[in-house]
Length: 242
Image 1: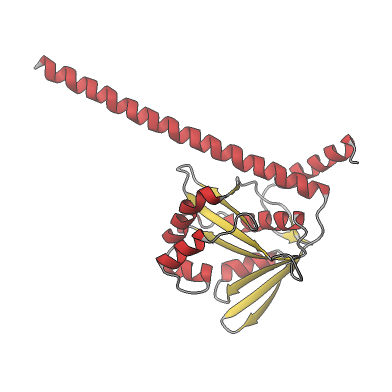
Image 2: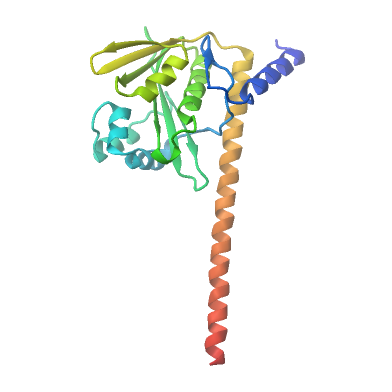
């Protein structure tokens, strides 16, 4: 049974790791070093429409790099409809307008011979590039995978998808090229107590951030409606005075 001292030490280590300043987002032995804290929220079945909307907004080339082929709108919608939230982990980053601007999908293998393996896929909107969101989502994926007993993370990407392969290489993954496609794999260390605490803290931070953005958006809508009412009253008074 874990003592209070163990929990406090794990919480301290998790918080120190998550709040370090950015310095390239490098990994060491499968876990992140010097990362920036970014609010990442878990996604569920209620987010299918937002997931589809995010993917449909991707430029044709970005969509091609994400899926490995020129997926049309129907294929993108079908992908969103078939996401298995009970088995896999899907999470993303929202902007202030509550638009999904980056998302990741960790697909876990079914129970059996390959149950210790998982595959990572990510997409970032063009307007959100250059902020390190892809790397942050990958770090979150590694943490989740470790906590679920995964020892090998795979990334299947087109060789021309240099951004994704750079994230994999920075994490210490082995990348093998086979013509137009590349396969990267990263060996993950077993989960520790601070890894599990980090997941709890990251999930809480992402949820709080989302709810604050939601409240702010609702408040601005209220102010806009109030402004319209006030303007209508002014117009009515003006017309009555004529």
